Image 1 (spheres, helix red, strand yellow):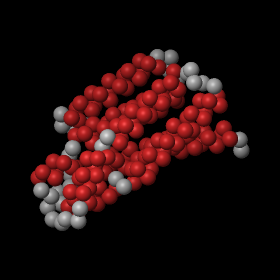
Image 2 (cartoon, rainbow, N blue to C red):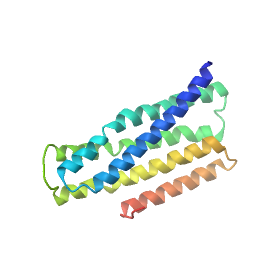
Image 3 (cartoon, rainbow, N blue to C red):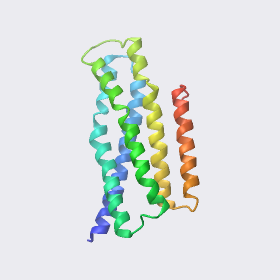
Amino acid sequence: MDLHRLVVFFHVAAVIGTCAALSIEWLGLRSLRRATSYEQAREWINVWKLLPAIGAPSLLGVLLSGVYLASSLGVWTAPWVAAAIPTLVVVAIAGGSTAPSRNRVRAAIGQHSGKLPLDLQRQLRARLWQASLRVRTVLLAGLVFLMTTKPEANFLVLAAMGLIAGAWSVAASRGVRM
């Protein structure tokens, strides 16, 4: 087996890991927003412990294997390659931006029991989390689209994905459910 095929496999596996992390985060966020007791909230917030263990290594794996593939194939000038690194950086920053508020909520839940106070229920419905998740989902889906279809109108596709991500994120910040 040659190294190139192994790196392609690793790249695809890392993309699957990134999608798995997004799926876990979507499920956890949806369930956490519905929690009415400390026990329910603790159960779903514990799911988020998987995110750094799956998401960060997967995103790093996509980036490193992508850099290797772009270098070995000599495609650094391809528009879809040029879009990949900034997109992955934005995704990493958007994901990391939610960590402090998640940690505060985890600490607030602690080992308490019983019904959640209304203030804590509002914190569990933080719109920043949903906005960040929506942006990352659209950007990564757009990047996968670019990588697989390699359209001529690369920057139009990126602009469209950016507009969709922005609109969906603004909808989240205004409390619009989708």
